Length: 177
Image (cartoon, rainbow, N blue to C red; front, side, top):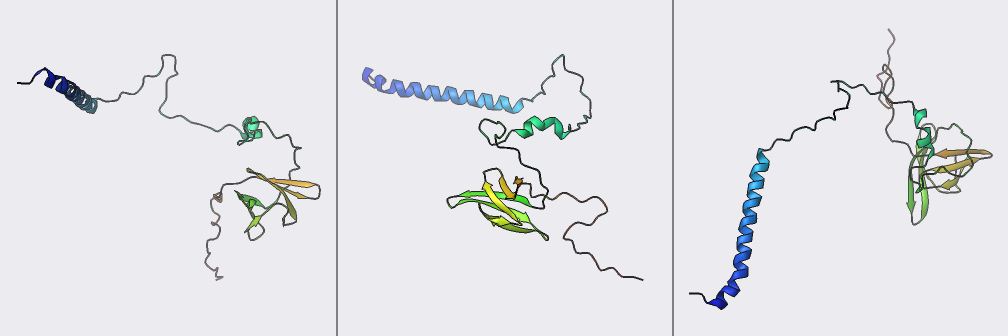
């Protein structure tokens, strides 16, 4: 027979063991009940328009997003730059990447025909343009009074129109009859 002192020692452990058994039974019940449940789709609100099987989406014109595009994405306050707007100049240069390191900012620029990739730093000249500033989201080049601002572009090349050969694909020699 266990005396009063023995029960005082065993009572907390017996209570914890009983609690563990109750919780294990509860978890098992929930687990078995969860496996039998089917998730029903949410009901649309009563005032929602009737949905059709096919929904056609057309992208609005890019001009409708001019306010969004004028605000720099990585600026903390999302306000347009206070710098004077640059003159738009067309060139064959594209900015591939910007690297900010302990040695300073560098940019990878694709230029020329055939295209070649060069690393540029501030003050360096490329195709007659001097690299004025390399920022975290763009580089600014200057040639006389002309200012060129390059932003990184996707590396994906656009698909050629149907009927035109893909670039860099060898073509069989043409023979004349």
